[in-house]
Length: 537
Image (cartoon, rainbow, N blue to C red; front, side):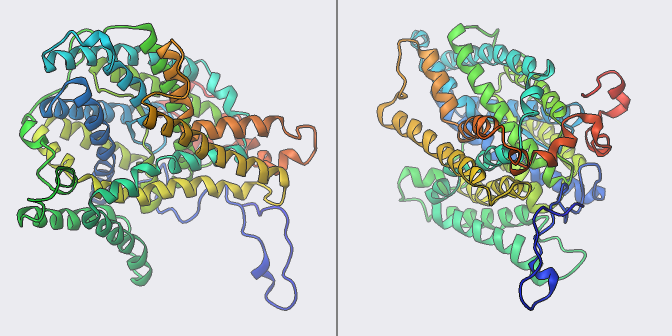
């Protein structure tokens, strides 16, 4: 591997190597299994189940938010969760086989919540007095908007428009994108954990001990603590929460505390069917509304941006080379197909590359594509056998939030690690980096606080769809950060000779086109020799 610029040997009397800069690594070292390799089948199956366990939390959180607003109860929530898991399994397989080919799970996206809530609050559904009928008609409107928004993603991806933009992306502008894709989800970390501190905090502490401290103390080639720390810690704390529930520790506590802490308050187990196979248009024929579609398209664009950050992080934790722009664009196209399937089946929300599962790649140091495909099989299995899936979906959310505190942190560090390609002694670099990170946190905070206090966004024209578009885009930290960083990086001091090297563009130049680096074929080539018919450029 090449060694970073600059240099300088040691000063005055110590060993020469002590003061040498750390070498720049195009591929992350220390990964036990890269994208194209796999552990033994028993271990791979257990790791795949662990990825399933991690991704289900976001599905439950989003379904808990939107289904009651639509008019649905526990039965409808269980059906929506199982439907999303079923489609997520399909989407994950498609993405790993024909999309980016990276070890990414296609999970539920928070970006779609604002337009979905806007649809549920629409006056046109007030005529339905029966909650189930209101749920079905609202879901059909969401389906129509998702189907139309998927066309935007497929167009941007398959026609190469995203490829053109990504070719101008440098390591410097990618740092805020990747870092804030994880850091922007901080509200789902400790604030959610603190809803039941006596359950969430032990999970966080045990997870850190199992994944970080014990492996450093026990030197063995067969150490399993770090690879299976999520399963072990969840099992321990879940059992502890069950003991507290059975012992009556929450019997006289407020309802909010009981919902967060008790293991028997999700309502999913009794509401789930033993066997139910989700099918297309199960809620009825989709309905289409132009305003709903425009707002949902803004959410699908945000999902593209955030998925791009996750793709870059997954390529690092999979010990692959930087992902070529044509491969990212191909993945966006298949993400559009995934959103189309979300609309056809009625999952209630759109898809994005799962941030928490990308973080799990870093925690386990297993970046295997096969493991992710096994996790997709678990999604399909548990979505059909509803009772079994409901048991895992009933894990108290503070336990899930504790996992997020660690997994989102790995996503943030994947972004910050890209600074190794940049010149941190450049004041241009310092300004772009600091300003993009600050605005990426500050602007969404303003939009979200305004919405929380006023029940509407700061932009409130007569066109609700336009208000939602602005709110969706500027509520996303990663989207705001990449807009700021990309514009500054491509326009500021453009004529100076040092700009290209300060931004780290020279490190990624060899990956701008698929065939410029021979390693791209190993990690990103399509299976079954399909590159002959669908070449990447």
